[in-house]
Length: 307
Image 1 (cartoon, helix red, strand yellow):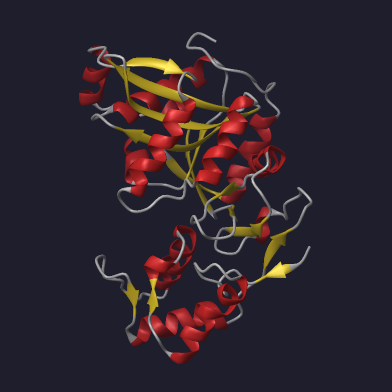
Image 2 (cartoon, one colour):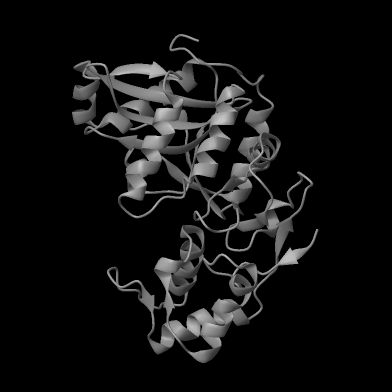
């Protein structure tokens, strides 16, 4: 497969500019506007800056001080490994070849490629105007089902029957709500192409939604992909306090009742950690993945609460 350096492009429409702008900025000693980069590339750059002990002020989107400029120069010019540029073939390279978690660029969001990605331990994550970026992070966030932590206040919510659980009754509304919530805050990676791709997976019976309803209104939910006995969580939203936590807890209980393995949460955050998720190395995740993909037949079709 052809190779491509992932940091030689930016969020521009022309590929030729994407390939060279970051290197040009670094070589000239100019600042780099982090807001113009996709979430995935911001993650890589911020991680490298953290490792280099370069401080980024939380409310400043620019990398402009000399040390930070040098760090960007290091990122773009010093021995940056090549990342596979996908072609029409479905296969992914070994996950060990990922650079800072980024495994491959390009390809498409067909059902066959998405299924192959999840079975390989890879997921898409990129900005709306960027090429598709495929990730296999060095550290993976997972929740082992017996490690679920339910706070005392959340137990009160569950006992109050405030929310009604429904499964797979409003998948399109859930994924759109996840996109809208993030679009109005830090920006979303759930583009229209992503939405359409996961709706196609839902139509195949491979993508599912857990939904919190109250007084006939959808107030929270999450969606993800299920293959074998693995559930790969993608995103969640909450229009009322605790609604997304309610859905996550219901997902875990459903997974327990149906012999599933740990929930793949992909990238860690404080919300997931509060529910009991933990971070494991990529190699350990790959072993879990192989085990639970082979542990049972994929449950296609719409799920029900009692299934």
